[in-house]
Image 1 (tube, rainbow, N blue to C red):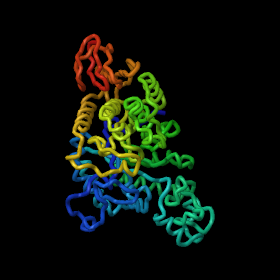
Image 2 (cartoon, rainbow, N blue to C red; image 1 turned 90 degrees about the vertical axis):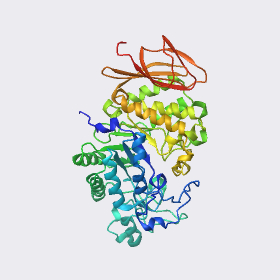
Image 3 (cartoon, rainbow, N blue to C red; image 1 turned 135 degrees about the vertical axis):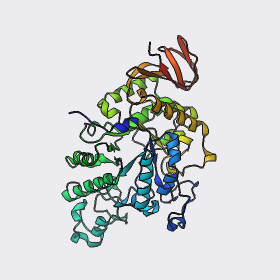
Image 4 (cartoon, helix red, strand yellow; image 1 turned 60 degrees about the vertical axis):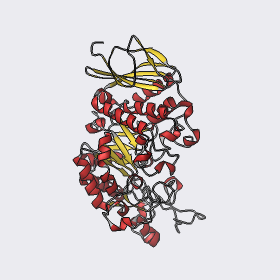
Length: 475
């Protein structure tokens, strides 16, 4: 079977936005939203507080996003909910009124598309919430509810709020706030398919699927793909799977996954013993213990052999997300670690994804702390901002960094060198994560694209530094 994935993803730089925390509109689009008792924007985030970010606020910052070099946005959930993260869905057809409702999303989607920026939404289709109409009907009417078989009910009475009694229904990860759908029910299956189709027809460019591995119904994700792609063959379908994803990346289901198998080793190599263990130890990826270059090379080669090349080019590569601590905090505030990780992210096959604020050095521990308000400009780290802008621009400028082959040239001690090649263009990436300079032999170099380097038969890589080099076409 010939695997087909969306071509635009291979050339995309994603920006992940947590809508409540990115930008609060400055204009009074809706009077209601100006009178809400929002949590202070710069205060430490809480589990249940709202800071009042909205989609009109995102629209006001589209120029910033475009100027950064981003051409795709992934939103964490935007549908009506009673949680600041909105993974507790109330209504899949209604954008949360606190974000501006369907009207704001229509305006934002059109404005993004006018700038050639794609928009991918988060689909939470394994479970809903206690406030979801169908489940609420079960709570009100018990065994008389026509929606009874939509969920996994064990016995009555149900206890959706009283923790001292068994819930008597299945909630995701045992959370009674998140009743799990019965995906074996054809009506549930059809309902979810129609939601997916509705928003694709509305104009979104793809779906990020929350915990899709929890959906066990045979053929579910195959049908999901078929129906989404029938409307838009270039729609992007990406799953949140943290480990080996071969089961879903066979070409009949997802175009890619959130590539935590890239994130973990990359942080372990580039940040090494600076990784703050309490920020990573209870997560499902492993940016520890520190890796030497040879170990990192082995992990990257194994990762690149795991899936077909067409899938590799549409993986969603990341270093942090709303489910992890932020990179700067994981690295103990070390800017060099952030720069090296970002360089490796921007030069690896697949689509890089930046978690909002990481590009300006926003810190944050494990959630909810990783979901801070986007900082005002006077609080930006301009060095980290400059690094991101330079590396994004280089990725856009050189096709070999997007779709070229990947070959390791040198991996020894703290030094890692690889090349990306496409037709007559070869780009060399060299990093030294150690604390002393290292001399290495490189192919003949035509131009230094990133980093300060004196060329010769052997070059000296400064300690804790990275380089991007254009190889001579006559080498």
